[in-house]
Length: 355
Image (cartoon, rainbow, N blue to C red; front, side):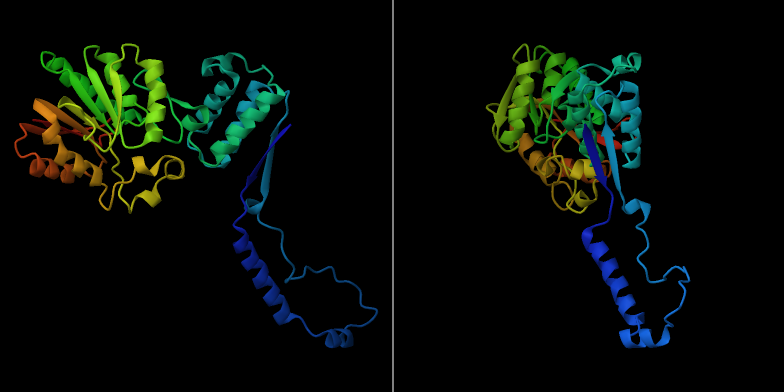
């Protein structure tokens, strides 16, 4: 039997303050022992009136919720129960999360779950599912719980050493592939800067066989994850991992630079959702007071590593377009074209610089 305890009580220090305040109020209103005996008749009957100074029961939101899955629980019941727990924890995707996690535990896909609601979980499966739901209730991303994330039609291994690939970043891959298709005669080398899991590099390589892609990251931990994905997905051996800062590890100039660098400002970082702030690597997110430190440094290096006629593609925050466009004009004054593109939600997301 597995038991999940969701502690939704306030911090102990807050409860201690409440208890202390009640104690002080009791002392202030409590008569002395002698006075109490002198004024209360020995034959007084109990009034059964509530004591205004008695400690009231704790509000329901301070109580501990206990959830357990029995080994004989069915798929349908497990999904309903997990969804309810996730709803209570405030997950905006409770139903989807419950399905994805259970499919992972059972080694199947979501469609199988819908056709097998009466399948009963073993004790081990119930334990594993409860453990993962508990972690999700505490905001750990589903991608880390199941150890993978789909991106551009490929299945990537991910863990807390790397940023989770986002759907909007597929726009970056689209832009690079469009450029490569239009310049097939001379475009053969690409650099993916801040590769993380290797998602961008491998997605480009998988869809453009003639290319060689250098995938660069300053984090050895991130490169270890990228190596697992290269081993699994790079059948033509197009992707070469390099360790170092931005463009400096490149052995030669390239035709395309693509980068999804950190762009969260120091001020905004503490306000990120707990799913992001508490689990994804800060190194891949935060980039100084304006969120532009890494992008600025990359733009300064780019002219030394881009071949004539090359292009630079940058993912940016929705509110950085003016600042990044200005930086691009200042640091790459000879650029032939600098343009901006919005993501699927209409937010400024991609800056393209053609040299």
